[in-house]
Structures are given as C-alpha cells and as structure tokens.
Length: 225
Image (tube, rainbow, N blue to C red; front, side, top):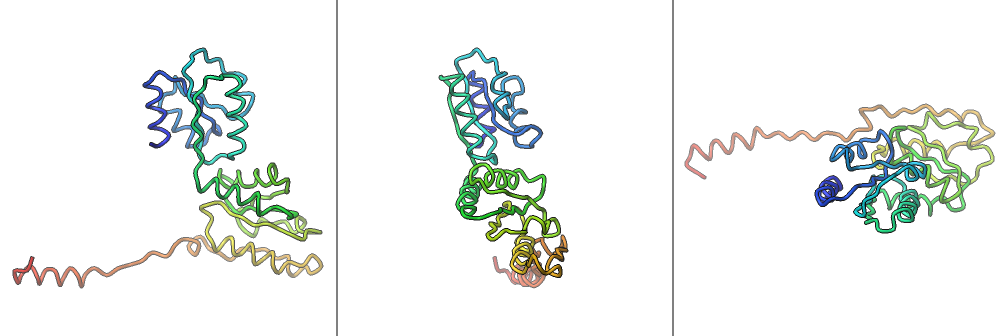
C-alpha cells in the first residue's frame, strides 16, 4: 500500500496523521492534500514541540527520500511526546541503500562530493549524511564545472557519489577531473563540462514497424489469422 493510500485509510479510521517531511517538497504536499485537516507536517524538533494533539489515535509516517537518521530522531521525539503513537517508517529502499553506502564510502576520506541537482532532495540528503553521520565535509555539485579547486588542496582521499537520477556521463566527468587534478599544475584545474543535455539523456530506440505491418496485412489478405 502506497503512503497516500495508507494515510487515507488511517484518517478514515479516526487517526490524526503526523507526517515527517520537508516543507514545499512535492511528496509532503501530496500527503497533506489527502486530508489537510488531519495531516500535520513536521520538519524539525520545533514543529514537534508545537503539536497540540489530544486524541489517542495518532499515526506517524514520513517522506520516503529523507535521511533515515533524521526520520529516526524525529520519530523518537514524537514517541516521547505521544507514547501511544502508531509508527510507520517509510524510507525508499534505494534511498536507504545510497545513504548507508555514503557513510561507509566516506570513512577515511577527507571530502565527499555529491553529484546531483540543487533541487534533488535525494542528493541533498547524501551530502547531509556524509557530514552528520560520517563526519566528513561534503560539497554538492550539479556537474564538474562547479568544483572549486580550493576544495582539493591538501586533500588525499575523496569519496564521490551521486543522486539517483544523475546521468552517468556527468559523474564520470567529475571522477576523471579528480583523477587528473594536480594542485601544483594549473592546467589540470580547468573544469568545464563537455557533456551536453542531449548527451546525458538515454538514446531513443527507433524501430521500423512498417515491414511487420506490411507482412501482417498480406497474411490477413491471404486468409491467415
């Protein structure tokens, strides 16, 4: 059952819904739209403190692309305030795997670079996880052109990861740039991206159906079914 269906079901059963998510993100906005009077969006501890629910029937769920650690911390606080709460933790499996991989990958590194658009919640959370869970500084970039050479001075180990929707070509450019970078050679500091938007998209496959169509028409004319 998808989250919106679950929320609708719980509301119909008389529950107030506490939804953990980021304000103005499409996923929480959709959840709020299910039942604006009964879905309460919380993004931080202050939001939880301001809740004034009096019913015993409270259900908690969350935005699937949030940091699993953030969700867990907020759920603990909600449970302390409302011990009788019913909790449904809903982290996208792919998101969870990526977040856990970042923590492991960043161990022993001096810096993490996350390749992904600034509006990508998934990418934002990866950078956050590196800083808060692995204790490794992180920078989020859209492509290689946004790398600041100063970040790389006196840096020996760099972890590179990417948001789920980041094209492979863009990530490859970042890795290639880092591999050839030499702090003492300004020539290697050039970081212009050569990947065009068209090149980063999957190539379409065009299939000529005219031959099959012609053959099928001939079969029908000859009485074949």
